[in-house]
Image (cartoon, rainbow over all chains, first blue to last red; front, side, top):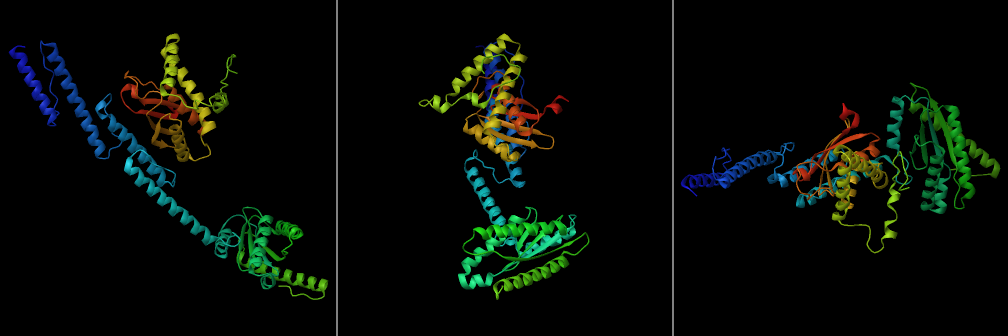
Length: 299
Length: 179
């Protein structure tokens, strides 16, 4: 090795020391007659460039620029590219969670995965509790029918809607007090559930069926006028008879009234009218019963 | 069903047979090396017999048939997109095909970007400065075809074999990709 080559080698050593200190300033390749020195110089130049590109990419990543383009064919950044892919996927997952998807799980970021998955579990639990509270606030726990509060909200909604004529049907369960007094409240509860089931089977899924009092039920029937509601009542009577034919414990008998309104009409008035008609039906049924039995106590 | 001439693809998931009954001792799994042995010798023959474009297209099309059957028989297509992708991700991991990550999804424009790491086809291959996962491209297009009912153009933009260490795929509607 001659003096010139020794000097070139020293220059390359200094260049490497600068790189190790973090100075990645590009330096041109050395022109050397010694092929090994020329190759070494070339490689140091490539290493410096790759380190510089890697530093730029990693620095962008550390600033949260997840869409930074990684340098091509640069093996130094391979683990950081993996990290970038993970973080971009995590970003996508977070967007899905924000949109309501609580089925996302993370299994690629060690301790963070555990924390993230716990957060999702907590959110899922919270969502389940909220759904339960919402359900309870709208439903009657004994029959699973809607409750009075929800029924009134729906009545107001139907009044504002466009599905006229709308009918309201009111049903009162006969003989509940007697059942409670003679057979006990547990049987009385089963009677209420049976009556709820008879009504539910008689209407469409889109109709709103509610238990609005101890032994009172009401139904909102959109797009249903008087003749069609009479058909619903006929179906209810069939289902009632069908139930009573097989029931040994108790019989379900309901007094029913209904009324319809066209667009612009008041559903509250229809409800009042249906209620009056239900009492007329109760009275008529009681009379019929009394005549058949000689005497009776009705409700 | 395996050897007669055909104008349309006839492969069905059931053609994989009753693996449990057929391999009571060895079981349903094998080594990655065996899979790659078949894929890369087949690739070698295809590239020798045909031009590179035809060979690549053949692999891509086979992947699409596989992806369609995989989606129809393994994945739950009734889920919404993010649920479906989570199911896809879970199954690719269970089958040890790779670790799928979604980076971007635009349901309106139907543009998706995803990465597969530890890919069955290529992770660990020697560097050849080229993307090599045409079969995966077809596989993803086949899965998306069955799920969305639309044809997708899927291209690998980064590959282990090209030195990128993670395979990245870009999927967009075929008619939009051609435009």
